[in-house]
Image (cartoon, rainbow, N blue to C red; front, side, top):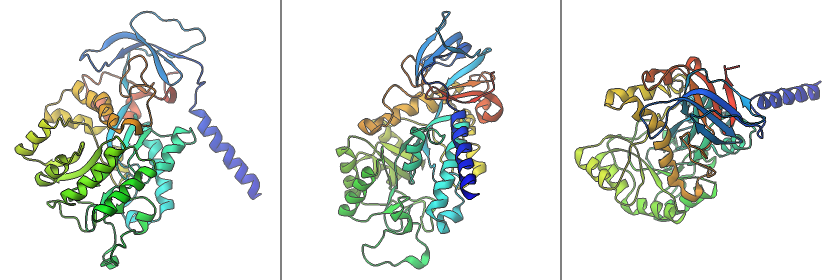
Length: 401
């Protein structure tokens, strides 16, 4: 009886996975769509987009006919590239904070699988996963064994003792000298490293795990047991040690920072990505401009399912900061893709560009019921307004047929 139940369960899971798949050889033709282009602020009216395999084969206003292709009438909907998020925590997004303190790695893994599929169904087809052990889920997604976005995984972020990722409980410190590899460190969620030699070792281990970039906490935050927001963390020598390791892998460093001093400490040794930076002053912003620091879109939802459901709503808030809907969408698609490119040869997706609808780009796209260039709030309601979601040429949601 148990064996029959296990077989039935396996068949159900296999059927669910197959349900999202299309014939990878058969082209898909989507006529009658208005395309958001990264170079033009106006829609490209009445266009046709053709995907072949996992790439975009045509994007034209001319009439197209593809032998053997599946035709999906766009019906005048707006086509945008799949959304991207430059700062996401797949392992932590929907994990209750109590589980982060008292849970176990099996619960983290199970919740990560669920969070990945829900992220994709909000229209986010690529995320930069900045902290946590999402390597296994990332590999399963890429193999088609479960559903979720493309992931550029950072692996466990580095923290000093008493820093942003020191999640040890009060009774666990003081610890014996050098004994900072706690339960979450052994399971690859976060790691504590003090001093140049250990920072170098842990950074190399993160890349040994398959990271596309390295994240290091250079300032305080609000999420851990003891982590004052105003402090700077790590010495210049320790930061430089991490940067040296990263540069030997030909990629960039993502720095968790809030305050002026911490940002300057991260930028001067060669940090390429400043994540958060909410407490910056004019001098620091000028330094970032001199070092060609660009603006990317991130949501950074943590420890709450309801918060993750508002992932797309962040776009609507950008209008209050003076960004146009076009600029906001560009930030959430092709601009983020430029940041992802800092992964260099460690970038796991190199067949074509991400975050755009040009010929040769990855076939990641969304059909929106309405025009987000006029009403950006459409992005905040993917359940009702996203009629089709495609990633890698595969349709995961369709209300078109």
